[in-house]
Length: 175
Image (cartoon, rainbow, N blue to C red; front, side, top):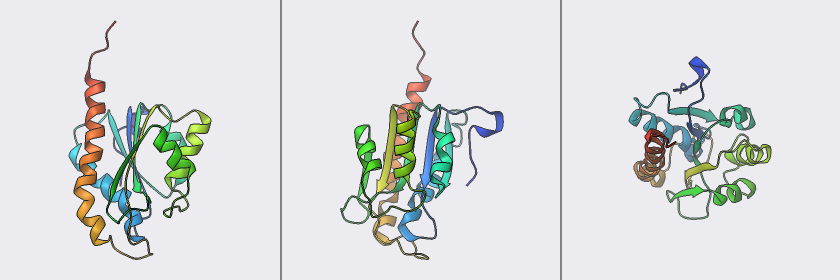
């Protein structure tokens, strides 16, 4: 998926929506799928929101988090709950997630990126992870039925966060 919103003019959009995961690995490809659905909803938010498919690039994405007001990461999120269960992490929960263990850990996942950005002081104060408990993570697998059924609701959860930030950015600054 192409980047929408900032690289063309050396401008950093205040909101980054970052899809992570490996598309050919079943439910681990969830981040890219959610990203695609969200990008369709925000075709006219250019300049404010950048949609980036980070795949499994991990630390190679560090320069993309710098200078943001808010970041929304979309990824498979192992919580031990049943497949398809949606979780929205914010604030200290994100840091606990980044420094904890996950069955979804793979090269280039959100853990290392978030933890390193926080250590370097590059993590914005407003950072969210919208994820879903995966079912099938096998190479070559398709999305599991449970995850497919929850995609729409996960998109709605991410939209709520993005919409709140778009309203925040649109409000006039008081002198």
